[in-house]
Image (cartoon, rainbow, N blue to C red):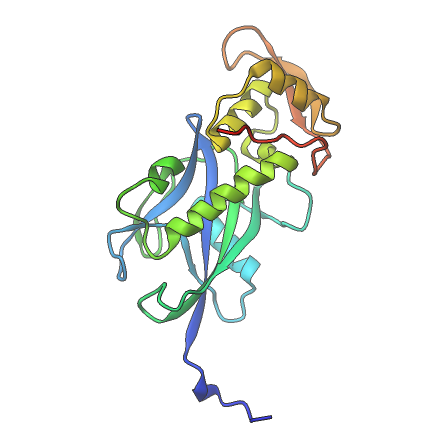
Length: 246
């Protein structure tokens, strides 16, 4: 076996990029930042940054999440957190095309974060502005996001859309106590479809462990008082909430 020669390998860096999804004004939105430095200065991009020396990938993603949103990351190895107690954070995929970053060989380990309605973001680091943007606008824009962030965003959105079919992850977009109507609007925003209210109510209240009564009602959506629920203990839904074909 030949001896290891570090000079035979080009230098490269590792970054983490975040697909942070939330529901705002009944639309699925993601956090984007306008880059303040080259490369792609002035272009919109996903938040993220370089992994520090000695830093674990998950810790780097959690640090970036706190810096960008102020949210504490929830350990993805545990059951989903109660809504309002932190953001769901999980590893999405690794992106390592040789030319994805013009500065040098950069491998990005993207992460997906889901949280309830989040406040207006504050820009920091090398980003000179930040905003929430509807994902449908970004995925259909003529001017793509910087780097390969358009593909990362598309992959993150599809991960969220598929996971709420068979898991209770949709409740991560809800406040601690929510109505069935509010949960239905999460599904509609993430999937981009309209759902029948009665059929949806029957499915979610009939799925064991999905929802538990919170013991109260609310009129915050207008109309008659609606029963409040909390996320139940189930992490997998049986039967699943299958996405309607469009």
